[in-house]
Length: 135
Image 1 (cartoon, rainbow, N blue to C red):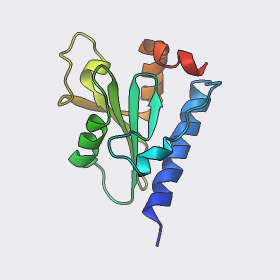
Image 2 (cartoon, rainbow, N blue to C red):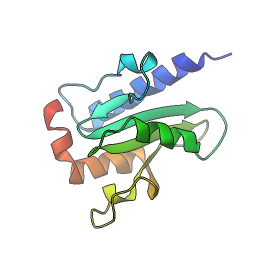
Image 3 (tube, rainbow, N blue to C red):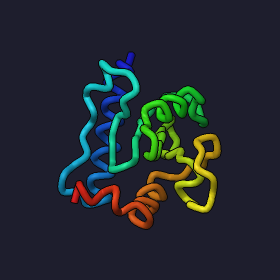
């Protein structure tokens, strides 16, 4: 039987490494280790993006409680992102719709799910200020 904590930590490292490489970060993203002891901390922080990573065996859609968790860990003025993966499915990222179109109302209830590659494209296209401290 797989240890779910180890599985989750491994997925967080995988995402951090992927973002480090894809965004050419010189100061790499690192897991927030205090999140295991303290509530309302995300797994990773990239500028104003607060990232929660979930790796799960069976399924296709993330649980509402996962999105609620990332919202609770995201301070006012920052952006939540839920990065999730199910077995035999690609990695997806749930973000608020207004992160894609700034003309939309800022709220966390209207979301879209995009590929990890599209999320990286979004960061490079609209949110370079969020990675400047890592360059």
